[in-house]
Length: 448
Image (cartoon, rainbow, N blue to C red):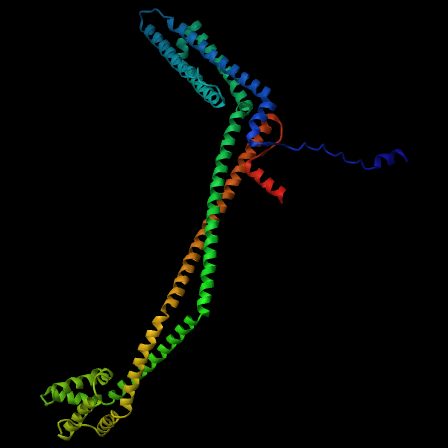
């Protein structure tokens, strides 16, 4: 093989080094794990932060000392300029003292990242205010109190530099200093979320039990309804109801038939009625029957003997023969026909109706004996309806609950990821934090 052939061979790609698997740490053990793994680094960062904080506080003390020295200086002059110069100096000193006091108020407070950040912001504002003097004020102070004022200005600049170092340190190392607090905070948030999740799951469990109860009750009610429908009592009840409906239809048909028959003699009867209103002599009972035949023919036939109705119709014929009323041939023939039929088919219609009414009373009495079956069936159907409505409502609640659980789990995962990122950023170590929910799922997977 030549040298060219050697270089022509494809070089095998080097495999990148395998990344170490993240260390699994239970959330309850994260704090101890951090203390064991990063104790030295965290302690070093705490000490450095305290050192930088102390340097800034010392700077403010030097500012105050130099301001005290400036305060004792006086410009002796009887001229107006003397008063202006001293007043400018006194106002500047007073402002410096006030601003130093606001910063020195942090002394004695427990030092953590939050306090340090507040401190560096307040200190920065104070130093900025100290430095913001007008050109006229700067001229008067540097001209008449050059040595004393330069001491104050130099100390302000020096303290600003020290504060910048503290600020940069907090930006780069603040999370390391705050790591223990962040872990406890995230752990508490996880506990609260887990409590919320447990509460939702308990509520779901109660709802699911209630739904099962309702479904079991519905199945029992349906089974009982099926037994009722198959039973003798329900069949008898329906048969009776059907017969009652048939009898009522027959009764109604008889009423309509009778009403129709008497409607055919309405004109002759109304002519007699008009004649009676003109004092044509008939007895009171016949007058009442005449009004009944005209306005309530069936009820009148039902309540009176056929002969009484026949007597009223004969009065129509009598009045016609007396030429007190005029009847057409068809009206006369129809009147005679009804008179004759009152003893035959119209009488039979009345008898048939009465028989149907008597039978209806017996049927209704029999129906009442089986009424409890229908009432029970109706009661069961109402129970089923209410149960199904409640199930639908509870299932909606379960749907909303499922979304709540999903959102809680997403938030738990987000916060867990945040904590893992903080640990990696501050320590360079990859960890996989196990929260109680994860442990439960893993246990289920193992059992499966």
